[in-house]
Length: 300
Image (tube, rainbow, N blue to C red; front, side):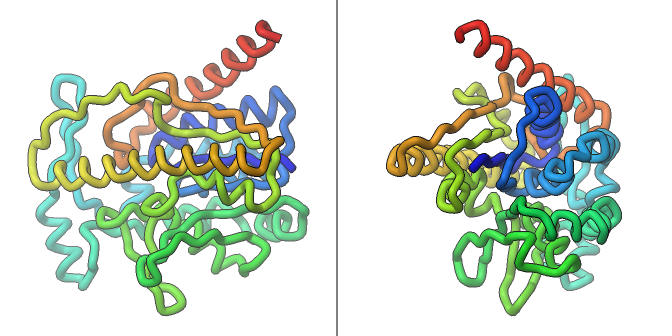
């Protein structure tokens, strides 16, 4: 059983899309399982439908307004580096509205529903492929995996949205009596879950470099400090997920895992959605997968 696993990574999902496009269109990969966390969960439905150009169009045209109804930060570019600072007015609005988070990502929820139709959902649900998104249940302190075969259209669209809500910058969602947030808070790369569900050959796209090349700039303000702390935690979770996934593969035996890391650091803040930048990352992901495939064939 073959599985495609895509990690979380916000705007860096554009790179994952490029890698997946090469695997699906050029290598003619056909997967039984599609598992995603956060931005990965946004990609997998269209990839399973083989509607690569459609999801590419989405990822290369979104901006901050596409994601946030109320964006909690401002972006200032200085010396070629994007820095974020708190948008005091918008954060105040969030608190006046009774929100528990700094920002509101309701626009992303609308985008998901606009771009995944009822017909596409029913096609996937009626098929043999399984589409699984990762969410974090903060109330019960556990990670949950939601399969398309277990929910209605409205419910599954909400699970995709919830999987992407990187709190406290994006919305916190109460569902079934529990508070839910970004799946990446608990599991950035659901390799182990794919193996548990029977996968014995996995293509895993990880939106980080294989070896740490990052030396974060000093925090400019309290808001950037919070962002750096959460990014640090996400990185640590990701490393642990990869180790656990490798151990699960070793324990089960005869499991093949092909890793696709980003060759360079794409960004230090994946909550910044820049259309031009993301378009370039998509091309980079495609070319990276093509180059890796060529190197493997030369070795063989």
